[in-house]
Image (cartoon, rainbow, N blue to C red; front, side, top):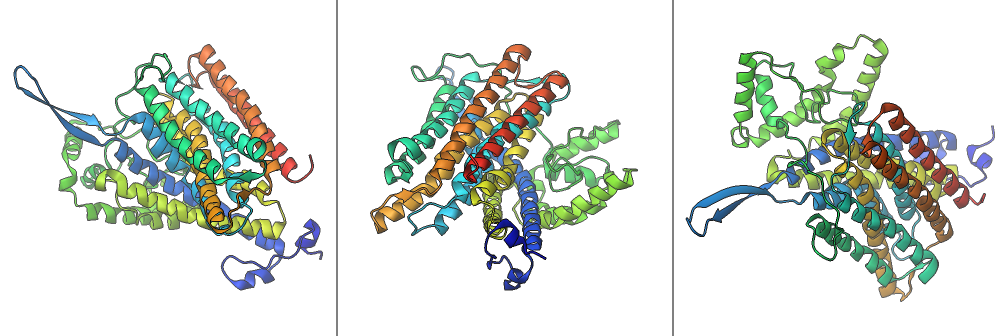
Length: 523
């Protein structure tokens, strides 16, 4: 039989992932094995994103006590105000957190590449591909998420336009660096300016949110909900309610694993008490405070729920054998990940910050494994690393973006966070995801060799940027058209929502095909 490597026209790969004996296996089997491993890592990313989003909700909901004294009556008035500005939370916590797999991947690639005059290919390729996945498939999903006829629009168009400007400018700036100022070369000052522009984005967006004179757009803001997300019953309060023999109540936290839908971490139809006794018990559960429930008990319950997910009574109600089997298989796949992520401290500690940071560390660890597997796939199959980077790798590492935007589109009353996560993630991908790795490599090269960083496949990357820019104009135009016709960007008539979804997916396919053909040398 002709070896797999001979068919693809490349030398046999001697590298391995777990043990050296892998290199003795057939390349076809190894490629299949590595693709399965990559898919399983993406499942892990989707699982940890649920914990990340929950901890982020706790961070954003944090309030501080403000005492105001009336100058005339000397009467003290106590009020509680939000610590986080929602616009800054969307750009920093949400966009930065969901883009952390790509940022980790690019940074790891840069660190491994230190000492070389040429930049690695996985980081930039993944980030540009991730930008396309964010803009097209995630918009496509968010458009059809609202229920039939339900409309969700951007409440603050001014902030969105600012975020959109910096998102487009990020890719124009990247093209200027690679093709205009210093073709195929990145200097230390260009990398530093790239990173600093993330700070300018934060300042400009905050200025627009606060309507600072001279630098903000004179666009009125529609009424926004007071809470970043609707209020939910905290996990530990639900435990109290369940312990009172009301086991049919649905949990809304991601630890229980009572649904096969990998996107959802919140129940859309929580059980409502039907009798006065049930209502009274629920009131008692809501009155339970964090001080009444030991944090170690909550932490222990995370492990218990991870191991008990196969005993979920909801699954037993499924009469279709195939659905039951599929649900059980999916839970078996999730079981190791859920048990591992149970080590993340409860989000009730330190307003969710410890859980938030630990979630990012887990995401970074999975990203490192993904990097190794992707390198092996490229080595075994001979497929160009850039093609893998902006297709399979970009789609997988963008999974947290997809999960977060879908949750925001489901739970929030407006489309601000769902769409802001997409546009801001694209900005973060360039200013931080490419800027920081390039800053690391250019600084090292400047100190060690007095040489800039060279980009080996700048032509293919620049072509991808041009294709992305052209297709993104079509995507944004459709969103504007929907705002004019239907009065909202997301939802609306079901038929038109699905047509929009199909059009966005078509734009993504165009980007992937053209970019792959260019990098592979066919065009």
